[in-house]
Amino acid sequence: MGPPDPNDTCCTPLPPSSYTSTTGDNNNYNNMAIAPAVGVPEVRKRERLRHIQISIGLMDEFLRYATHNTMSNIETCAILAGTLAPNDATFYITSLIIPKQKGTSDQVEMLNEEEIFEAQDSRSLYPLGWIHTHPSQTCFLSSIDIHTQFGYQVMLDEAVAIVMAPRDQRHRVGIFRLTTPGGMELIQRCDERGFHAHPPTATGQPVYDLCRHVYLNPRIKSEVIDLR
Image (cartoon, rainbow, N blue to C red; front, top):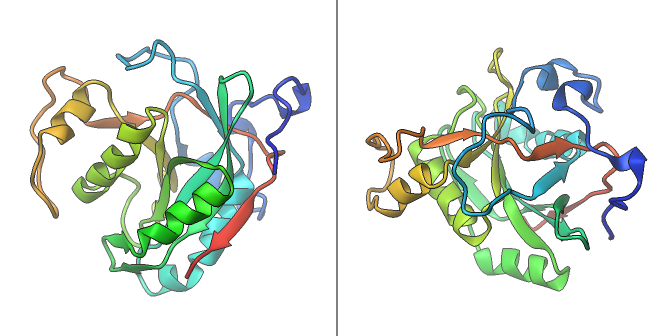
């Protein structure tokens, strides 16, 4: 499955506020916690983060697969994978990989990770982050989530963590990443596991922040790879 043509103006990403849910539940995305694509610059490893494009349809699809767990107050997770444009400027999230997993009301663990790697490698996909639900909590990254995100961001600076919190009336969707260098350096030095507090970063940055490099694009075709 190829990405949209980056030269096709119909596929040009638009501000997130221009989009609504493909299921018709506009409230899910009017309350999306996402920073504008242009804004206050932050210190980064790269001079400029490459853009990531994702469709609301893929997030809607993930919620549908998570429905049973959400109703049972159990978190659900999946891998976000995709392709890189030939001009090396934009990643496209084209695949949702749902691994075997076990979860509770406040955490989720992926199982059989070798199956995830095989699914990515066989399709030549980049791991672009992960997505998970907070079935009864608000939209944020817990200390466990932060350590999980660190692993993705070490592999790819642009990697994102999407949190979907259906019962959060303020922000039902959030797209986050650890700040660089502050958040990344702090978590690299942290050996604690489970739920725990983190001290302030050495740079004064928050540990994580809303993404500024993610665009919503309804024209991206996507697939769901359910490994459960």
